[in-house]
Image 1: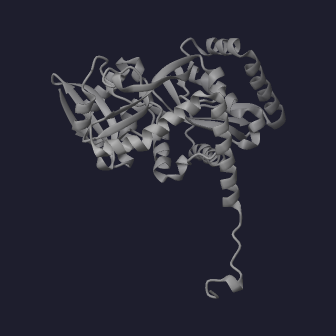
Image 2: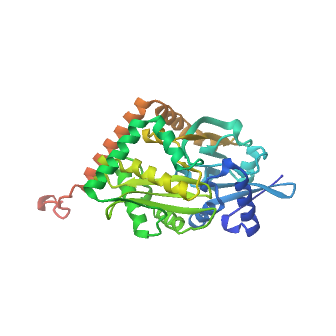
Image 3: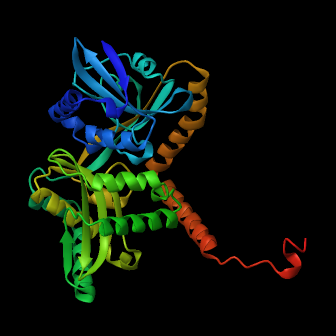
Length: 376
């Protein structure tokens, strides 16, 4: 067994070809966040991105894309941006993960969206849970029948609201795989507003994330691409989404809508149109990512298993990282698993978001003459 750590840009064409070959051979790896294309894009924007190339018997058996931060702290590629992490390897690959960390120069690494069941990491898995997917393998009509059978009232309500929106604001139109940068920026603006309103961290306040999304939006290949979609009422954009796809899987990433249309449930309406067009494009599933949103529960017709895991080597840095991260992870799991606690936490974050927005929008009065800096 040989492990070599390189920067993404140092991967040759042979390594990239082998990466794609391994990924295509295993259904559990069919996720764009595990694609070599995503790793290469991240490597162009972030200096701390690395790839462990694992050889067994002279042949490449796997890759571990990761981030190496100060003091040997490791993170999955993309960290909180991604919803799928782990080894891209042949199914039977099993190595000592501490040897892998040592070769990567890492003291510890934490996964929160790990592909469950990988032999190397399986003994370290905690909090294994299902992530909802829209199973389109039988076509869109078969998918819709399963949704209606599971929640006929919800489905009927969404379609009623869609017809109402069409009557009041113009004919409903869906755009699949838009290449328009203005449309992408509209989705990002809505998402930034949602992050602020709900008390979350605004991803798009970081310029490198904006650049990443814009670069991936321009990617077009059979195995990897950014997909931008939008629902319109007449000529008015109502709800959109930017995600990534492989040849068979579309991953939900940045769904957003104009809050002026909230009463029409535009996000769920958009997901149904997106599923229809994804199926027509030959995709087999839409991965919505793990999370406690109710709409995912009634839109889902399948699940993928996702795990959390922490691997470390004995060191003061690893111990400090455990104290700083693991108790918070466990608390988050308790909140997510308890619907009443989840709703309470969501209300608290939204209240914080409203208060923060109010403070930021409040005009700052100029100092009075007697309280001016010069007077003091």
